[in-house]
Length: 54
Image (tube, rainbow, N blue to C red; front, side):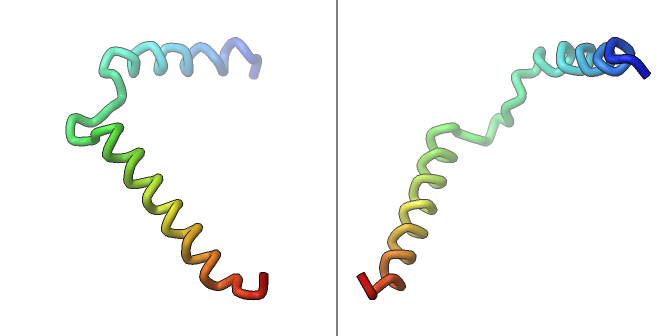
């Protein structure tokens, strides 16, 4: 199996997927990013609460 025969279907699939944009209508990038930031800050806060020996 050559590189070209492997890459050709992937290029076709990528070209077809670009027409739709890839985002779901109900997902807001700002809400998703804000939720991820909140979760990471919460995990950081929990980690620092357990690290009392410093």
